[in-house]
Length: 283
Ligand SMILES: Nc1nc(=O)c2c([nH]1)NC[C@@H]1CN(c3ccc(C(=O)N[C@@H](CCC(=O)O)C(=O)O)cc3)C=[N+]21
Image (cartoon, rainbow, N blue to C red):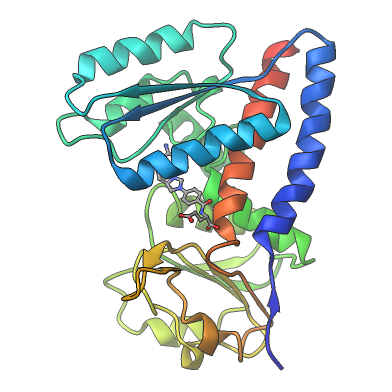
C-alpha cells in the first residue's frame, strides 16, 4: 500500500485562514502586524522566495515591506538598516534573506536583529531558547515539519526520529524540537558511517541535506513518516527533494511531496511567527 501524502499546501491554507482571523483581531485593537523583508543582491531563487513571502503576507493581511539592495551594499549599511527596523514600531518581524553576498557576515547581521523581531528564529537568543525549552521564535522550516506531524496525528513521544542533516537552520533545531516532543533522536550527517542502518530503525525520518536521493526505499522502515526538506532540481530542471519520492512512497506510511510539502509550511510558519510577534508587542 502506498503512503499517504502530507499536503503542505492544504495545511498551509488551513493555517493561513486561522492567521487571518488573528490579524483581524489585532487590527481591531489598533495593531497592524508588519514584516520587513530585506533582499541583498540578485540571486534569482531568492527573488522568487521573497516574492512568495510578500504574497503570503498579503493573503493574511500582514503589512509587508520589501527592501531590495544591490549586491554591493556594505555590511555597515545593512546593519544600519536592521537597527532602524529594530526601532520601528510598525515592524514586528525582520527577515534578512539568506544567502547574503560573501563580503557580509551573515551571522553578524542576524545577531543585530532584535530577538523579539527575529521571526526566522536564527538569532542565538532564539536558538538558545529552543535549546533550553523557553519561549522564543522557532525556525520556520522545522517548525512547519512539527505542525505537519501534529496534523497527521503523529505524536513523536517514544518514537525514534532520525534527522539527516545538521544545519543551524533545519537539522539542529529539528532534532531539538523532536527531542522536546519526547522522541528518541538520532542526527545523521556527512560523516555518519552507515546512514541506512539508522534510517531503517526510524519511525520518523526528516531529510534535510540538499542532495537528491539521500533516502531511498531500502532505507525506510515500512509505515514510517518521511518528511522531505530538500529543494533540488533534477536533470530535467524539475524541483525535487532529498527523498526518492516514487520509491519511498511504496514503503512509507506518510510522505511529504516536493513541491507542495515543507516549502509552503515554511512560509506559513513565518506568518505565524510574525503574528505572534505583533501579539506580543500589543500585550
Ligand atoms: N532568512 C531566510 N529565511 C528563510 O526562510 C529562507 C532563507 N532566508 N533563504 C532561502 C530559504 C529557502 N526557503 C524556502 C521557503 C519556501 C519555499 C517554497 O514555498 N517552496 C515551494 C516551491 C517554490 C518553487 O516553485 O520554487 C514548494 O516547496 O512547494 C522554498 C524555500 C526559505 N528560506
